[in-house]
Structure formats: C-alpha cells, structure tokens
Length: 167
Image (cartoon, rainbow, N blue to C red):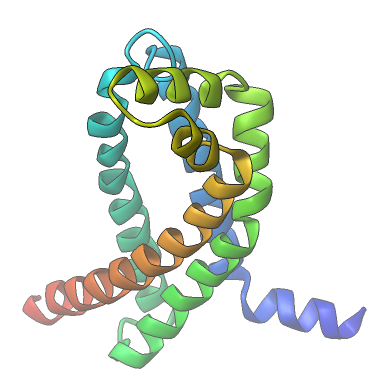
C-alpha cells in the first residue's frame, strides 16, 4: 500500500490531468451525440470531431503551465515532456475503458449509423463491417491517441516554456 501511495503522490498531477482528459473526451462524445453527429448529421461528423483538438491542446497547455508552476516556475523541456508523456500514457491506458463506455452507454447505435452512411457513400459492406467495430475503434484510439498525445506534449511544452521566458 505504501508503494501505491508513493506512486500516486509522485504522479498526482499527471493522473489528475489524464482523468480530466478522459472526462473531456466523454463529454465531447456526449455533445456530438446530442447535436446529432452520430445519427442525423453523421455526414458532418468527420469534420466536426476534429475540433476536439482545441480543448485537448488547451488542457495539455494548462497541465504544462501548472507543472511548471509546481516546479517553482522553471521547467526544462525534459521535465515538461516527461509530465506530458505521463499524462499521455495514462490516457492511453484508460482509452479502452473510455471507448467502451462511449460506444455502449452514450452512443450504442453509432457503429450501425456510420456503417450505413459509409456504405451509402460507396464503401464496400465488408470493409465497413471490418472498420466500424468497437475493437477497431479501440485500437485506432489507442495508437492515434498516443501519437497525438506526444505531439501535443511537445507543442505545449515548447509553447509554455516560450511564454514563461517572454515574461
């Protein structure tokens, strides 16, 4: 138990922001569902879902800013990168559970709708049946989430360090 407490205390900042990011992801999907992007406006889904990058980057920027503050106002690139990597790794570990929750509780009909729309747009049914499944979305989310998390970490770490240096 003591090792768990030490681990939790050491990485509290990263755990907190990973949980916030996962919550943000769930809220975003709920918003997409409520605005019809998972059914009546599914043709627009691919465009609007990309706007999730904006709150994601802002959340990572806040995380980097707070980490720098926790470190006494000075943070080198390695410290920022390691903190962002920690957030990204925790988010990546939570992704299967988050995706399962999203696609079974919030929007269980999403795959049916996106398959039908894709077939209507010319995708072969066997390709749509393979691509639009919970397992493929979990795998895609894990890999793309990790890569985007690393890119966002690099960007926000540099940005926060630059902003603090200008003061």
